[in-house]
Length: 336
Ligand code: GCU
Image (cartoon, rainbow, N blue to C red; front, side, top):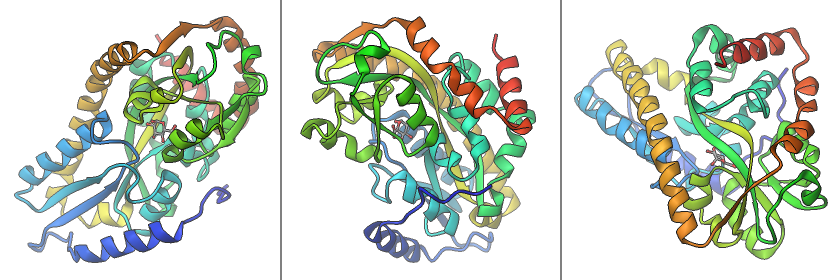
């Protein structure tokens, strides 16, 4: 079933992106013109997703003799993820990186991969989301919305950070306003951890933390650093409550408009981008941790069992239908 409750396009983003799309005037039919695929990203240019996709674009341009390239627009310049997914669906933007939370609003079966406890670690997650036997049908379900899911990029392990004091147990989060992505799973996840969830776009989190509109947020160390959230919320508590997942999506018409040769090159470069991203994830997380410690961030370990117990009921709540169970069981069976 399709849910559009979170979909909405801000006027400014729409006008800007439609104008950009019109500038291209490209022809992906292989008839000699070059196609520049515009990709919407909400991260900075130092984030692994930018680096891997920017490299993908350059390598693709070389591999196709200039026929196809990818241009990555960082920092939400083409709109926050909630708008970006709609722009890719309607073709005004060609590609986007969106969190799994956005895809659960298009097809609730994506919720399974957004749940705490589904993935043990990045390696497990990447083996599942790269396995066509597990994800093939799920990904294909978005084709009716003109979206082709190329695959997943890890978000790594996510934890809670705030400006007041270290968190050790869910009780410490009682009454805390915690920013969440626009998703039912995320809302319930923070409620289960005893916090008060506040949905908001990624790009608004820094100011919301700074002004006290929210008390806390949750993310991986890489985004915590690159978005500078560490400047305004220096207590990073290792709740490790979730291994998050991003997807890279492309407008199906744009994908199919490529010549067979160009599409083969595109698919090869996409595979290379996933490999590069996963490798970068490890090194950039280590670098971020060192940099954050040097900048005075206070890391602490939590009562992991208390958080696991609090979060467990989410699986029962969200893994209900036969198809959700099938995806969940296959994902868990792939855990080592
Ligand atoms: C991560 C993820 C993004 C997501 C963000 C968020 O940084 O990679 O895709 O938008 O978290 O919390 O909104």
